[in-house]
Length: 173
Image (cartoon, rainbow, N blue to C red; front, side):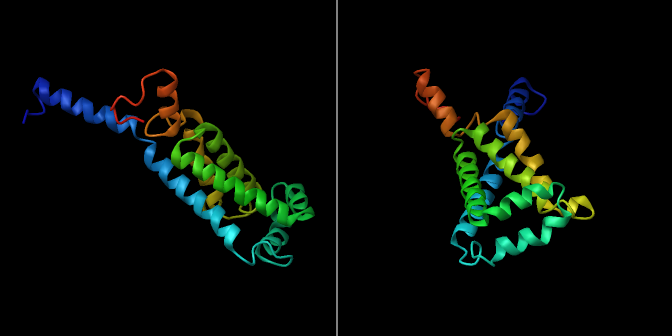
């Protein structure tokens, strides 16, 4: 094994550093993907979430007066079930797209918009602000909106197929 100070050791260290940079967003993709898949499925399988006096309606009424944009809550209260399904299906789509890296920037943008709307309504009144997790989720989505999922993703695989490279055994798809 080559010592770090030798040319071979330096190349090995550079290779490790390059791989760390290349795959730096992968843990974030996995975390946000799994979390949003779980959140969407949790809502869709909760028998009380969509009920007329259930979890969603109760929560909307409780945050209405403290929301940054109460009109958003009012709009959701016009059709709580429709709003609930839109959020749940949006979370599921953002989570699946992010986890598998399919239309990853679009999926991340969807996740960011969901987090933004929840921050402006549900967690806006959290004091101090860092107790509300929706702002943190919004910030976590932004690197994925900017960078997408260029490695270990369906996006990368589709790009390689379009270019005629297949996956070339690089392990980057």
